[in-house]
Length: 567
Image (cartoon, rainbow, N blue to C red):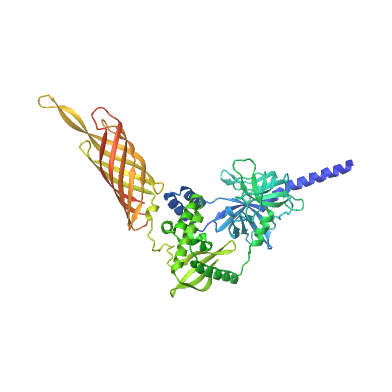
């Protein structure tokens, strides 16, 4: 009996040591996943982000600018259809066109593989599959366990959560705390439930593996789920997509599609798109619009399309922007513009041709040839551009640009003409920084003279009323509220300024607050985002603290003119 216990102890020790040492192999099978974008994408995202922020959609604009800077998640190596791939979450590479993979081994030699093709992605599954190149050197991958998990089962989380905004390897241990958690925000028809567990998950762990110990696997573990979400406001409440849903996702995709099959799919999609014009509303066209359409539309043109959209499309786009979900809003507005054009045009499909990883369908519109460009995504083909249809979705479009929406800054010089004789003309140099469509902050430097009342002796030595000019240097700042209105090539912009400032002079110091209602006329220059403008305003200033050396007026009002340049 004692011998049997000794053998059992040695076996458990050997198994534990094997598992411990095999953990070194985990880093060969779990990697850092970074989304990659085509050249110029960052600038386009930032352009759209600024345009949305100026229109009052601050969160949506910030989300786009954050997207431009990229991020990272985790991924696991698997074998599918005889080839090796990396599996990760859809939300890790949602808007990317390819992915960069980085493996960090215990030899301190990082292995980075760039421009890996995203084979498939599915929002409902929140999963994506990334192809590994044939020369990657990857020789093994995880297998998925079909074990039935129970509450209390020990599990491990493997991934690269962020530490100081940089990915850092983490292997966490916990238990299954709810074997089949169901919630409308995490589960759906494709994922009926998720696994709730307590193994450590942090930002950057998304797409990493939820593991269970397995002595039959070389790594010592098999995969029971893909870590996806972490609950806020609670400790150790983490969620993973179960292996069953992952298997369903893999079965639903086709990684090797012939050119002939692709052309047939695009032909079908093109005919379906043309037929969608017979239905009312943009929603019949929406399933055909790809995200890459954004790259052919300047942000200023998109904002004009937004302004001209149908009521239903505009209302739904506003809801999407407030979520914020800017990419959904973008697709809605483009779908609406395409749908309206289709309703006005008789299109006839004539054929397809291959162009790199894209397929172009040829159509005719009233005898004129046109093209529709399609690209694959999640096993389907989506429209990303048109040519020859006058869809008003490129730089050479006939939409009048809303160039004022592109303005960030303005500089101006001005002169003030006071009412009455309490002050002489005032000269101003100003700078303005836009923060939203309706709101800006301004900063002004000024030079002027106040006229003070005093007494001076005459020739006979008797004191007589007199005046004296007191020069001052001033600084003021404050909010600038405006309502841009466009009439043809000219913007008419009613505004109100609320200056708070100080004037400094030997005898003319004061602290003041004021108001300046007025109107700005902005004239567009050659480039859409450059303007000359003229301001005409009523200026009022009240001094609530000033020098008492001379009798100075408590308030001054007048008329001001400013000439400026906005960019």
